[in-house]
Image (tube, rainbow, N blue to C red; front, side, top):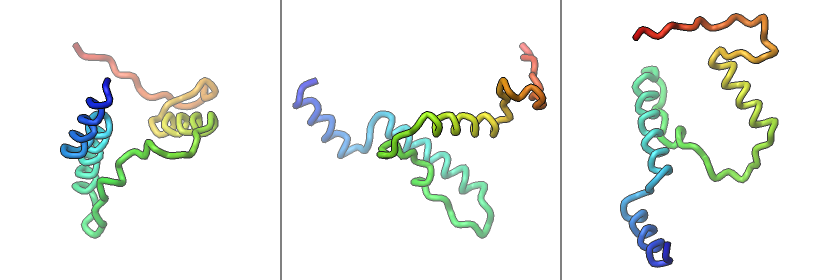
Length: 98
């Protein structure tokens, strides 16, 4: 891509807003904020869209321990099991009806 074409895309983005994945993140955050605000309590403040935007530009490096801790947390939140959890109750498996 030439320097001229890059400059044109930058100008387009300044006029029309972000393009690509950043725009998708903003649209998703808008939907999430709408759902959260629709279901919030009467006396609770609205949740701003910015609360749902991912912060991809952090300078904090992610360690292997942080990565696996996040995986374990998500697994636990969804009722998942690990190889070490042989005594843990299993989720019921459903047959597909087709």
